[in-house]
Image (cartoon, rainbow, N blue to C red; front, top):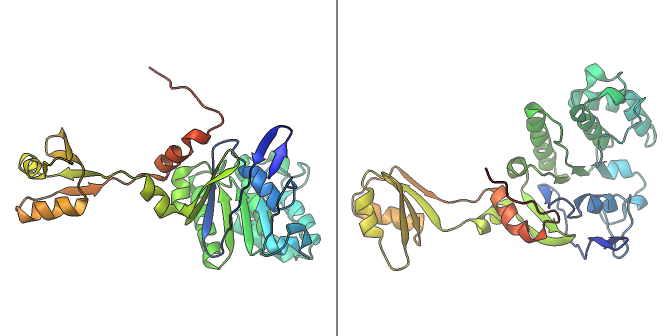
Length: 297
């Protein structure tokens, strides 16, 4: 638990982040995500409870940079230092070689600006430098808070492939993001919180499955005949356009089998699958701290 004044930022929050997969950390603004990540690496102390990384508190590891790499604030760098100098200073604290610094500058695409002052960097360049710093010690655990902020499409794609590649090596990857479409492509598992409390600890597939309805989209040149065959007391059918139906109350398998038995061709048979954004909005609706009003035109 973490309390600031009269505000409970993190409340009885318990979860594990497992190696070998990318775990996404989701929640509305003010949910306690950044505070939780700060407590993991010892920047904030919990008022009650404890946090361990690989079996012990972060501060008790003899070489923390080799255990945990973290990016919590891309601009937490002295503006007068060059990118390379910033990494060299961090590397020197743990006996990491200059060669490793240069390897990482190349990995994150900053070799050509390595001698430039960080104060002149864009947000995206700062994110790349922060990721290089997080990877300095070749850590088994990586914690990234909104790493794709400020990155262009190429950078976002690069981050996605990097995180999945690191997870395949058996590392523990814990990453937060407000970009639901990107998290859907990157994460395998989700930790979702709201108002400092755990809402969901589940795979991405199960998270979206539970939010999906039993709606099935059907496209057929014999829509009227199929509709007559599907009608039933628990079935609701809507003709959305010529040749297109929306069916509630039957599965796609049941519709397909009935169509096949009656020689009705199907051009589309698509069960509705909620997007990660749909599932997130539905699950966290009551946990949003800053509610906005609808805008009418």
